[in-house]
Length: 442
Image 1 (spheres, helix red, strand yellow):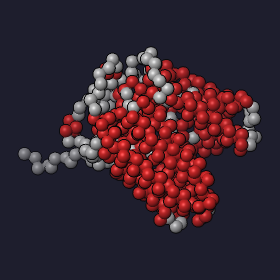
Image 2 (cartoon, helix red, strand yellow; image 1 turned 120 degrees about the horizontal axis):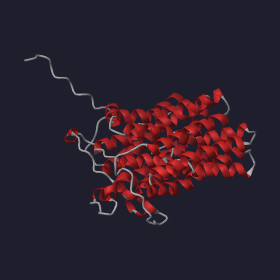
Image 3 (tube, rainbow, N blue to C red; image 1 turned 180 degrees about the horizontal axis):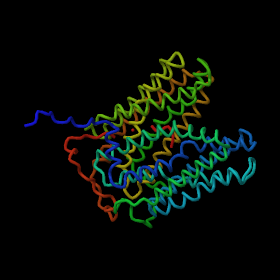
Image 4 (cartoon, rainbow, N blue to C red; image 1 turned 180 degrees about the vertical axis):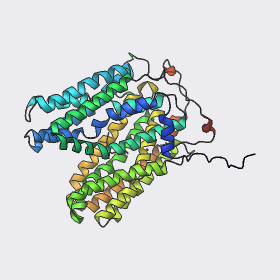
């Protein structure tokens, strides 16, 4: 009989669970292409501003071009996602994967500031943005995964968003060192289009893609569900403090040090969120997502209040890093709830509405912050952000019964019920629990 002690089981960390997830069949390809396809999402508004300025346009012209690109995303996003749900992944991603880089190349090389063509092409590019976020998140809901693996996938999505928020602008800066802003924009757009084409052509298990449907739906689509409507309201409320802080942070840094340090302070915010997901997300919980959600939003609200304790630039960076720890977790559980309460036939559209809710809340916060930062100062805006975050937490607790009923009600049978494959049980499911996270960007 050997005296060698049995090997210790591997530590249950986020990296271990993500590694196991990415070893599943078809998952590495679809996840990899989705990362490439989402690179433009986090920097293209900035890139269009830089291109217009490089072309000799004014800041007003650059702002209008960027605003029309963003407006195109907001208007076209739900429509493209609805088409994705009806026609399937492949035709929509193939079309947008070709049209999007072509439109941005035309903007960079074939139009000039002040001309109507540039404005039209900017709006068209926004509409044609490949729906990679919505597509991938709806695929996570449909892929044959266990509940634990699915929750890990959503946590991976939240951490990836933080990494891209930090890393994508750095990639743009590196490309601009090697060439012009127009060349950088073209390269990034081409990468995004290539990623969309790759995501379209990946072969997935039978039943993962919903069957094409000609069913007509009303304008609101998934928002007809009271639970989905309540969830998007909470998500928009959670994003308002993000927008407020976006204006208050540079004002605080300018008053307590060099304005050049603003970028480093912002980076601490994103790093804190990513590390919070890695650290706090490693221990799974048996608490259902509708119960866990308001608790995480409350933790996020209390973290927002840490900014009121900052008296210097380094202390603000520390407060944001610590206070931002729950952000990715809030986003992850939001995705879990969207996948649970939305109709399985309109998952991509549901995830798009959820992202737009966060974008709208962030925009409201930025507008309010811009109006408040001069009369009340950065610290006053910090206080307003804290109050808004507490209000979001109160709304989350108020919506908990509705979300609980929506996630526990038996699914109604329908003709497309076979489009969502059953979860594959794993040996660890008997003992493993679930972890399931406001996005700062769409």
